Each structure stands twice: as structure tokens, then as C-alpha cells.
Image 1 (spheres, rainbow, N blue to C red):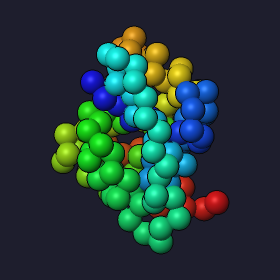
Image 2: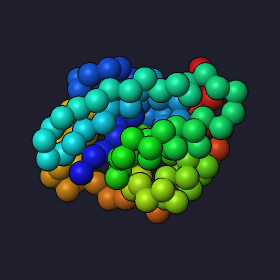
Image 3: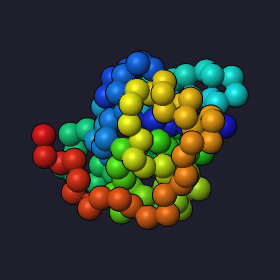
Image 4: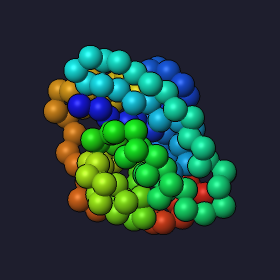
Length: 122
């Protein structure tokens, strides 16, 4: 299974970024092989639609689940349509999030947990 974690930096010891659409980067992890891939988020500074564009990018990379701090309604809807599970309320480091996910410590979110413009203030 391939998961994506929103990250504030490019490695497993980076903090989980609380923003989905405007996170610094995505860390993709194959939970079976532990192979990782870091992708810089090209949507950090777009004027609008960051959540939708980031959700499409994550789905295009083959993620079956996203672990993040928060996810707004547009991104959540886009991820659901693409068949990507959304897990919110994730904190700590990327490494800790992966381990907790593998241990079954998270549940998928059935709805967004923030408003559409969350994370646009810097």
C-alpha cells in the first residue's frame, strides 16, 4: 500500500505538516517495502485551488491514503472521488506517523476538518 504524508521537510524525521494543500512536501511510502519518495509540493504558493491540485497530484502518484494534520472540503472531496483515504489529526514526525499507521492507530476521516481557506495565512 502506498501512503502519502504531508511533511514540513524532505525526510522521515521532519514534522508532519498540518496543512494538506499547502504543505512543503509529500513523503510517499510503500508500507510493505518501506520505499520512500519525497515530492516537493508545487502548490504551496498558488493563488487558489491548492487543495484540489495537491489532491490530484497525490492521487496521480498512486497513494491509497493521505496522512495530514488538516484537510479542507475541496481537497477532501477530490481525494474521496479518487479513492484516496484521508486521515486527519496527524502530528509528530513523518516516521512516527508511518509507524502509527502501520499499527492501525488511525481512522479515516469521513468529512473535512477545516474550512476551505485554512492554511492560506503565512
